Image (cartoon, rainbow, N blue to C red; front, side, top):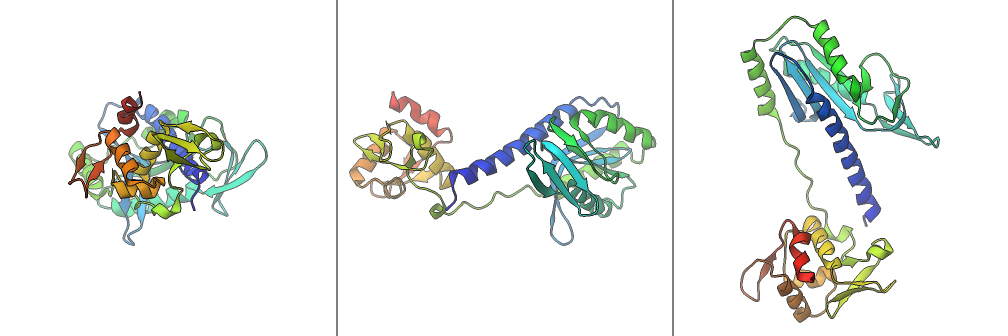
Length: 299
């Protein structure tokens, strides 16, 4: 069974990645360049083997294009060109292994050479570390690696390296449109099977380890005796996100451990959820902003 710690870790990783990309976005927004350029974010393309290439950022102008791989990692980072591994050493001495971003960039470069073979545009790659506490230690010279603050100066180096314009603005626009036409937005994974996580209203005082039981309008923890009415809004929001955006009387009883059909019916009617169907086959619709929606009913 998947635990709260598992989902917390998955969220932490996604949130860290998003925060890193936002830091780099601020640098992109400060670019001053008199000619036409495009920046494509989270671009997903598929190669001939039907394997995806997910590009964090792709800068395209008339002179060159630059693939950016963004890493929001702290600690001392060592990139090994022989083993193709990246290791992170934390302040406490713990060593962890990560996929080598250099290998990822080189894979993207090879793919884009094929993808853009009809356009004579030089292709460059770089790895940006968005976490200011990251220390870049050993790394090969095959791909530039620098902190986000170095993006502007790196672009200037590339403009100096490629002073010639290879494409007209019209050709550049067609080229960028080709990327957009081939972009395949990421498909969210299917919903997790309900059997893989804890059901019911979980007690926040017990770190969500114990289930609370419903009685006479209150939810009470059998472990610490904490009682609350409002905690149901948080639990129902989790249900909406993890299971489905609708609920019936029988589904409410099964998931939240309510024995009485009448009690479940009173609970659903209390919050005046919109619904479809007659009394016997009624399906209640759970709003997007569920916790905000339910708040006035607890007052």
